[in-house]
Length: 159
Length: 159
DNA sequence: TATTCACTGGGCAATCTGCCCAGCAGTACG
DNA sequence: CGTACTGCTGGGCAGATTGCCCAGTGAATA
Image (cartoon, rainbow over all chains, first blue to last red; front, side, top):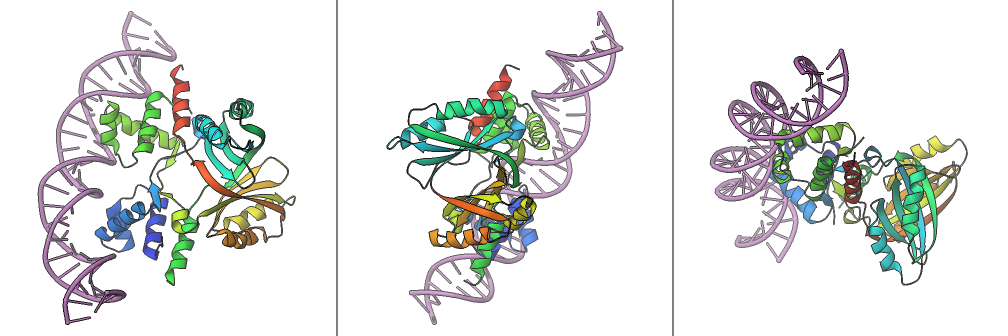
């Protein structure tokens, strides 16, 4: 998938003002409404834009503690462990990483004390050999995509 | 911030069908439009819902490789390192973690080879003492929030 | 040269939004 | 016990937006 400059501007605009609407976008970008609409459709069917789900802040939900757990999985137990972790609501994300049978797991909890409960639930499963946890303190760069989109649009310029 | 059952249903509905609109939501939830609207406003001003930005897939943008880098920062250089990393588009997220001067950094790259370039750029900064990188292979549980929202709404039930 | 593709600029009906109102129930409080 | 207050309902209204259609144009391509 290649992204051109207009695509980039659409995504950035959308990221900055999500409620903006196709018509207003076309005005801002100086192109026809149909063009913006077609671009958006294409970006979505190409999978560049996955969706527009609400971005929920776990802290505001009462889960201000974030942690990462590195799990070491017993050979062949990967699938079971994934299924297990998928049932834990406090597991926000699960990634398998390099290193034999390693997984990285993003967790939230109601408090540091509550984190113990969450970790117990996470690692209280047979296939997990070892777990080490790191607590997140600050989030200087919250998950972002705009700079990368701009970069990708730049790169495509010379294409 | 406490979330009640209706709030939970609104968020989940919105997460499942982001384009749905307030009117349709009120129909599905069996409440008045004004109620949904008021709840949404409250959720947003409370910070529970941060926004509705597009969810962009870095892989579809041409960055299929994801990695995590653990950085060890020299005492007192934290702010500089943050500023430095914020300028790197491939840095999608930056977290400070327990452990003196440790940061966790989410990266993407165009390829495994390109990852080297990204890492060089990331760690090519004075305040960074040491870095270790883990490449992500699979993502069995993509970043999700619905189970947690349901959990939070459940918990509030008895309140 | 003929064809295809993306974009433009316009129009249309249907829908939704933002905003307003009065009424009503439950609750906290004087 | 009465009185405010809050949140929800159900309705209405004008204005804006959406989804969808069309013909024309320019550029790249076969």
